[in-house]
Image (cartoon, rainbow, N blue to C red; front, side, top):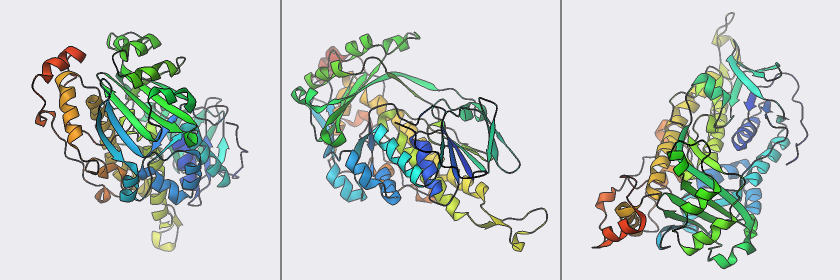
Length: 460
């Protein structure tokens, strides 16, 4: 994607956003809508996104609608009819979400779109909002100042603003400096591909659905993109090389071996996967503090998840929306200074109050997504008897039971009291399975991966 023109806001910006991905650009746009002068610093030489499809649930399309961007997203994406979960070994349907009914329940659609298309929507929106978009700016350090925060670039230059938002991703420089924790490897790896729809039409695919095949230590996701002209596939599996501590793990030979025992539809899709790149599935443990003075972590810098809940980019978009809402609430707060009292009329944004409100509500919500995503991934990849127990529980679920989605697909909370209650897990041990099935399962796919509870959401 080519760079847009780089409008100059003139002088010092109100906010510096570090990182020009979906989280950074959506946040820059949200803040610019509130009248702030925003500068985005992107380390690459051009703005762009790498990847394939991305799923956007109603808690995100609701925000796109408020931004006036939903129609553009609809024109570039696909509104699937169902999310269907199947067993990857025998292809039997386990459960589904009727996405037309889901839209009626939550008021906004469930959409799938190419990641680069969603990125482009926000890039164009930022350009229209006069966000200052600067590339080839690699930030290597952050520090607070008396009136805000400062970033230092690799070439030695510095930039300052009353607020710095670190949206610099999983391997965030700000996270390393301010928190100092390490990424956590799940030992799983993802392969992706987006191919012309004609290449998969003979493979038994469901063109109008999002299909998730879950299997022992692997899963496979399929759905159409770009008006149905392309087909997105994601293949995820546990890497034996990673478990053995090898550096070069998740290689194509492991991909083929991981899916050798799956059903025809899945096996036919594996040869189409891109084999020159793959994504190790990493996250970080949840943290309680995202705000350090006038430096705020956002998106993957604050809460990088595993992909099972399909909420990673959505959480980042929500972060920016919440931050902008709290800025607006505290945009003209009387502040006492050394020479005047608050009553004397020194009025300016109370960033500290806005940041405290942002952190107060987002930390807990995103912690829930991270921990539920880990549990959900464990559940998807069960083998042996536990696979059969999981399947029985999922088949027993009513299609129109939203107990497991209300907590995440509803309106984004602005305060802790607006955060909905979590779902109630269903213990695997509560499932009844057929006589003789235990021995058959052990023969087919080996021992289970450990006890897990039914987590919420049906997405990758």
